Length: 258
Length: 274
Image 1 (cartoon, rainbow over the protein chains, first blue to last red):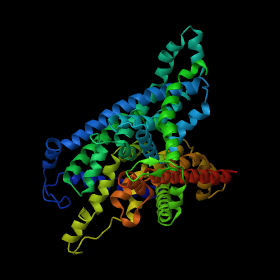
Image 2: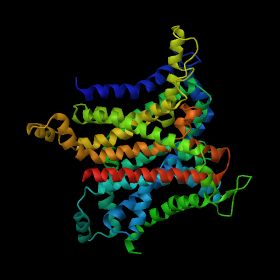
Image 3: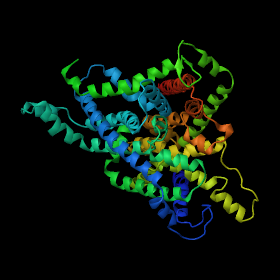
Image 4: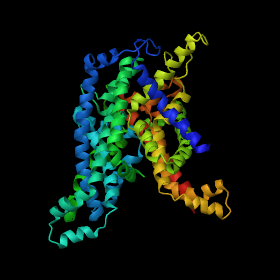
């Protein structure tokens, strides 16, 4: 058949084969990992019952993701409303701050935030990770919400005001409901960016504030472990679930990124 | 200040505090000297940059650029036909979800998948040894090619998604129209479709090339001695050597390289369009 069909099949195999082998071998009873010795669930037992470090990391990741994406969604949505409906002062400076984080490598953001914390003598903790994650999520929130607002007729706003709505009422009753799919999409995006982030967290995490990606990184540095396979299966499951649940909001995310 | 600036005030303060100021500190620190105990001290100096320009680092900088450029090219080459197929397929939504799932699967896990497959104790080596094809494991990983493959693997969705979303808006009957008017299919694709998906391609290239330039985890986990990239060097200087002025100077070099790449790219693309 067509070349593009052939390439799509190849790319899908390339994308899925490595993940699939990870998942299959998480049920393998051999310790060496890559030799099939029969079906077992013992690595899941190990993961759930005897891996406190992994769960500690998972808990830290969740805490940071929830708080940073809430903060970023709130501040970013306000900013998008301000940028779209009112012409704010310092517009160029604001734009620079929104677009520049998107086009510099993440590692630079990690290094520069570490330098800030070090020079201000702020102790590295979950709080510094929260500050960093909120910062990188903000740009995405603004873009996704802005893309949603741009689809709307600004006369709606004038109509609400003409009918006697106060500015606060207009925001609450007209703008927020209109932008809601974009707001939810940007929350989801911030959440997943935060949960997934490795490199920025690597620089701004301190002792006792290890997130899940940092924990996995230090585990696989020392070689293969079937427990990591079991964890992978669960994370892949999570990604599939998220994709199915977030399907509705996907187009708003793409609108902001495209 | 205007009254409505209240909406943008929080982001203005937040990003000044946590983006502009940190970047400025990084620039200032790169012109300072380090103390033997991992601190930072005056006087201002350009010594860090002079040190970088001497030899070894330039090789690492060059390697960082070619690995990133090659990975981006391969990713683009794979993404164009895939996005084309997705945008014209009946299974559009299913294929879109198939691209999103790896995108939302943990980044470190996706690197681990390759160590599991191709590592020295990995699956493939085990199979080869059991079949008696080789006696000792083959070192597939721990070189620059492995780094390229894994970068392509992890960043592929970042290229497919923006190109797909640009192609999806394209009216494919325009290609038929061009062909009816006598253009060959290839020519129709290049002259009619390309200009309208250029934005998606630009976004994809930037989404892959820029994070690739700042790679740390991938070369750290699947690269070897000969595939150290700038990110690894920066991390080493910060965590192990604790030489912050030097590390920040390296970061600024990465920053300037990125800005330069961006500028060149936009310039080439701009002149191309006219």
